[in-house]
Structure formats: structure tokens, C-alpha cells
Length: 484
Image (cartoon, rainbow, N blue to C red):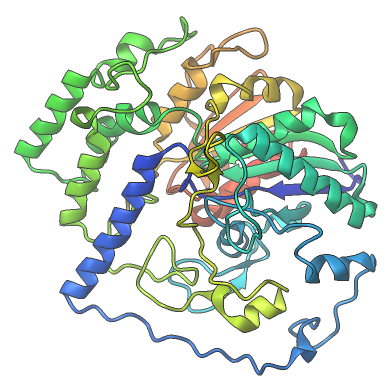
């Protein structure tokens, strides 16, 4: 790969909007619980930082040291100032979160008083473009007009074509697509669209990297593995015996308890059934054990966070205001910041409260009508890519690693590389981080790499940036193995 130009596209981040209404409700409940607890106990928020903008536009194209910013491509000035010709991107959660708290050149993560250089920035490996998409996210402009992820992919494809019209020096570059959470839908659909329309885009797509992705139905990635997760982490979920018995009864009656023993085998024997759903894709109220667990643990741990279950009191503040809610200062809502990045003066939200899909028949707000990627486009993407990697944090409860294992291993309607799922089991303690040692579990078969990280919740480049950096280095062809 040495000497080749590279371009890396980071797609929209967190699993907030889309097909999963119960996840959306869970996050709203979490935020409300944090706010109610703070009000009940008179917990004061940090003071609002003053807006130091002087209103003078003279410094908009200056670096921190005062030197002017010059673009080798004169059209770049138009690109940054004009948000109409090339749109800024779109929903779920803004990729500005990824830029500021995960894999960008600076880090301003939870609880940090000020930003610091990010030693594990992905810009140390490649050119990176953070794309907010679909329309409705962050600073993106326009009205949502898509009903599925083929339409989403087509719009991202159009964005990339326009982007290359401006930054023509990047034409012919090697290209990768990355994202996390609901990007388990976005990224495979985008990559599949690019592969199927390769002659229309002057980029060489090489592979994808997705972390803690939504790959299947909520029954698989939330409900089935929920009680096993609780039982394996009793220090974080210290429920009393009566409630534990209630959870066990639900798990038994809904078919969760013996699911792995009955249906998961190596190699797999076929597509797995959905349980606890009454023949639909949605979990019944009686079998919604995941929400019940969240409600109960939040009583005994007011700081409980589905994104990383090891969070405890006090609740750390976040400069972007999500997923924590203990402050009013939102960095990307400062007018001087918006001016500096040539963004419109709008009320920026890290995760959009509005719907980003429409009902194709009525034109009113709707849901994503796409089939999960493991059951549709992901096998094709794996076969056509040089390297595909899926990561998962072992402290994530909004999407559980064991559910992701099931989705990868046994749910694929279409196999890849001549077989379905993984043919041999994932071995424990098989992933190592350089100079640290054992840091999780890893498995590789037929072009697909799967890695589970210790210490990490949902946003792996934020919580364990060294591990995420090592795996993306592998996907980009910088190393021979993700494990060092």
C-alpha cells in the first residue's frame, strides 16, 4: 500500500434512528432518568462556558497559531463555504461526534476539561472524510427523502461523485468505508452500492470497518443475549434473588435460555429462528427482558449507561451533550465554532430527534424499510472486499457482542466464500494489543475479521482507541494481522 493515495470515509455514528424504536425509547428514558435524578438531588451542572466569538470574520481561515489556511485546490474554498452544491451529510447521530471524541486528530471525550491531541487519530493512517448522512443529521441541510438504505447509498454515492469533482486530485484513490452502530446498515449498503456501480465512481473500494453494528433484528442483538450478559457481569447488575428469578422465568418462557445450545453450532446448520416475537420481527411486551433490565439497574445505579455498562456516579459531562446530560455547553452550538467550520447557524444536535426516513407512500416520517445487512448485502460486500472487519465492545449493552456473534455466524441467508457463518468457534484471549498483551477475542475466516475488545462500550475508538487503531491499520493494509 506504500505510496498509494488513500481516502477513508467515516459514516454516521450511533444507533439512534432507523428500524429500532425500542432502542430509541431506551436512550430517551436513560437521558430522562439522569435528568430526573439530578433534579431530585439538586445536582448542579457545570457552568456554561462563555462564547468568546468577537464577531470578527477576519480569523475564519486561520489556524490556531495565526497562520492562514491555503487550499491547493481553489474550489475547496467554495466547498467549505457553500453547503448547497455538496451537502454536508445526514442522521441518526452526527459524525462530528466521531471526529471530536473517537477517531479525529483531537479528542474531547467525556469528562475532559479541554481537548487534547489524539495519538490514535485515523488521520495518521489515511486521508479521512467524516460524512453526516442521511439528511437530517447534525449540520446537514435539506429534508429527509429516503425510505430505505439503497436510496441512502445512492445519495452518498452522489455526494462522493460531487466531492471528487471538487477534490479531483483524490480520483483513483484506494477507498474504505467505516462506521458504528446503525452503520451496520449504512456501511454495507453503501459499499454494496459502490461495488455494483463501480464504473461510475473514480475510487477503488477496498473494504469496510464497522464497530458495534446493528446487523440483525433487536431480538437477536438485544433480547436473546441479555440475561446471559447480566449473569456474566453480576458486579454491574447486582440484582436481588427475586428479580433474578423473574428474569430467569422470562428467559425460559421466551426461548432465550437454551437458544445457543439448541441452535448455534460450528459449522452452522442453517438460518436461525427468531424467538420471543410471535412470528414477527418485533419482540412482544412479555418477552422484552432487555428493557426490563435497563429499568431495574437504573434504579440502583443512577448513572447507568447502555453505551458502557461500567459507568458509575458521578455522571461525566460531555462537550457534545450526549449520551450524558449534565451540562448546557454544547461545543458545536457555539457560533464562533460554527463560523470557524463554515457551518450554518442552527441548533446542532448530536443525535437528531426527527425521523430521517419517510414513508414512501405518504411522504410522511417513516422507518427504514431495509433488510438487515447480514440477510442482504453484507455477504456480497465481504466477497468483493480485500478486508472486512467487525468490532464489538464487551461492555456494550445497547447492542450485545453475543448477539453480534449470532448475527454473523448463523443468520446469513446468503453465504459468503462458499460457506455460511464461521466454521469454527471464536477462541478466547486471541486478540492482542502491542505492548499491552491480551485485549479480547478474535476470529478470521474467508475475508471477514471479527474482534471483541475488553474495556470498551459501544464507541470503540473512544473507549479503547489503541485497539481500534490497530484493527483499522489492518483493514487499510498497514499490517498483516489485527492482533499484534
